Every structure is written in structure tokens, then in C-alpha cells.
Length: 116
Image (cartoon, rainbow, N blue to C red; front, top):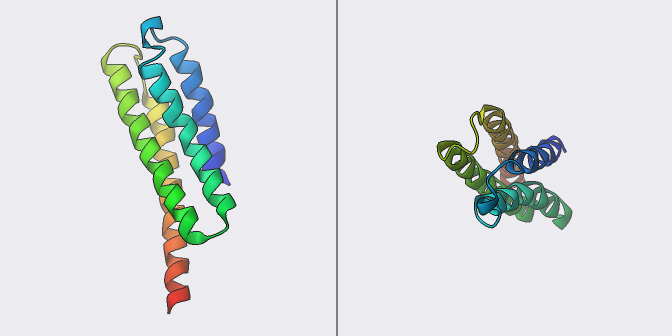
């Protein structure tokens, strides 16, 4: 699944970038960003494994929430001067957000067809 693959790449990027953050952030922003990033592909895969469209959709919504958290944390890191340019992370977040949105839309449409 393309969204999961992209999310896995985002995790690697976040781990790489946060290695350069100040040591005092290891239990703060670094931990938060890494957890939010890991949550995205984790929720996509867990939802897909559940077997039902409704459950999958719920996990995709949670993944999208984690993506939004990560976006905010990335902006905070930039504003604190820990990261000069967050554009590549932002582009990847935007791309994954759109992909997850497409999956959610597809699942909703399929659910609507079933109920007709």
C-alpha cells in the first residue's frame, strides 16, 4: 500500500532529523515526533489487518490525526531553530495526508454502495 510505504519513509526521515536536535529534547519533542511518526504506518497496517472497512477507516482517521500532530511538532521544531528547513517533511506529510484521505473516501463510497 503506497500510503504505508510513504509513511515508513517519513518515519526514517523523522528519526534522521531528530538525531540532530538538542539532547535536552530527547524526552520532549524528539520523543513526541518519533511516536507520532511511528503511529502513522502502524495504524494504517493495523487497520488493514482488521478485515473490515469500518475498522480500517477508523484506523486511517487515527493515522491522519497522528500526521497532523507530527506536522505541528515539525513546525514547533522549526520555530525553535532545531530545524532550518522543514519543507521536505511538510511535502511528505501533505502527500501522505492526501493518500489517506483518498483511502477514507474510497472506503466511504464502498460502504455507501453496500447500504444502497
